[in-house]
Length: 218
Image: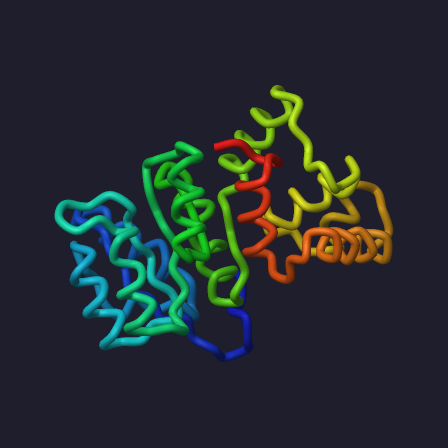
């Protein structure tokens, strides 16, 4: 098992899905990690607001589609109830438009239910660290579609586009260096150049730019 972001630190979660069986399975998955605790479960977006406000969890795992109030519509209330809580969307919807909407609404992670067993814990950990996490298979689908259409960022070099995509996937500078056969110093230089050119500071902003400005098409 991976250790948490800090030795001895616990990640608290509120888990929201309208299917009790799904919640049960996800709770077992998440709590198999020694430092993760599910402190509350809910079946509606309105309950999510209440429980997040009551428990102030590290992360909220939120189903995108539930009966009643739409999840994305509830996000401003969730953020008002606990500004420090990070939100990870867990959904069956793999359409790029939904990922775009979720990121623009302020979520920190987007994971497909079909890959929850391999991706959810990582997304939760990245969210707890304040990092945006978009499931790699979904991101790669968007990147492949974008490549087929011949789209590229107008202000970035081809190498910078590669680096930016890997940053948005959640890779560290050393991981990017290994994948692209570059030095860490070179990756850091590319990253600084990307942020300077686009006037973006965080990974979340880089992901949103990639979705909104032609690097990824929705």
